[in-house]
Image (cartoon, rainbow, N blue to C red; front, side):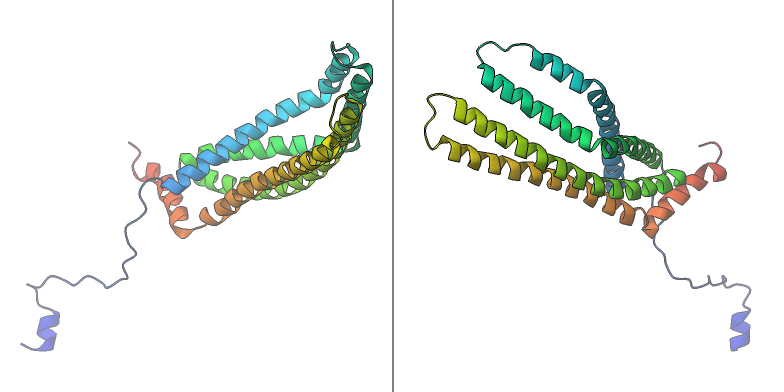
Amino acid sequence: MSADSQAFDPYRSPSMPEVPYAGPPPAGRSGWLTTLCVLCIVLGALGLVNSAFGTLGMIVGKKIQQTMAAQPQPGMPADLQEAQQKMQEEMYAIQDKYWTPLVLAIVFRVVVGALLVLGGVRSLGLHESGRKLLILACAVALVFDTLQTILQSIMTMENMTIVNSYLEVMTGKTSGVPANMEAIVQVISSILRFFAIALIYVIALAKIALYVFGLVYLRKPLVIALFRNSSALPALNPVL
């Protein structure tokens, strides 16, 4: 039989075109995507709660603290009570110094928190708009947390300096304190300052790492295909 007759053999099944195998389409939400969405929702919700308490503290916190400081505290000498009141006034002076950045931080924290919550919830439902919104939320949160960490570390350093001064005054005015207690207090104050700053940066780095992971992961081809296939499913099968 010739080659031409083999090519047009009516009893032979036609050969399928050779195409590269792209693998099975993604099916279902992955564990990484679920974890990312849940963490973003939790961080966004905490940011909204923090904004609410921060606004309340900036409005009435100073007045409440002044009212409590004006009341005499039993058992505390007058000079120590005066030093404590002075410390609180200096700490609120720092808050007044950074009033504008703190207000802007609260406003942007509300925006970031809302984007994270909405983008996380929509992404859990595999909506393509949710994926894009969560990418935007991670990008905005990345910039916000970087600037917020700088502001928070500066204010913490200044507040810890005031607290250290108060501890030194309290140690010097307390009777029966050993002679080397002031040096011990200074060492403890330095350690507390180091741990306070370190804690701020550890939390910030963990959040920044999450946002960077989200920006990279949500742009992967398989993740994009997962969202697009899920968004196209109702159009292909209206019953589902």
